[in-house]
Image (cartoon, rainbow, N blue to C red):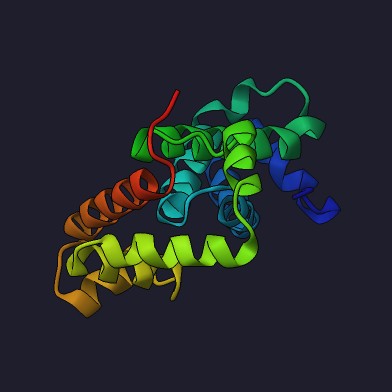
Length: 175
């Protein structure tokens, strides 16, 4: 997510407080931030993580001491937002590799597929629908709201509940 050489002047101007340069910098950085968030966030958190990371950049860019560190700083911001939202939404830390690895080792690929299908089938239809639209069809919250006739807030609520139930089914709390 390195900022192209042609944008270094833009970064410097934004750092000095030029509001138009900051706006353009955020516009230039947004696709890279989104791409990174899509790889590291729960799908329902991508838009929120992008927005939060860019808001932090807008507020704190003047305090960045070394402009060459901008790209690494931006990646850490997105990473931190993804983790924060993942923990908040599902009481799930996507970096809890040990717990996940332990669970994966206990199942072969066919077993994992069967468990995933069983977890999805265990969900009430209205939760399953929202989860499949978001995670399988990769629709945005707005697109799901249009398709289902729900408000975006209702979609987010159902998605949160669906993931919580699926997680409890797949990874029951244990010692």
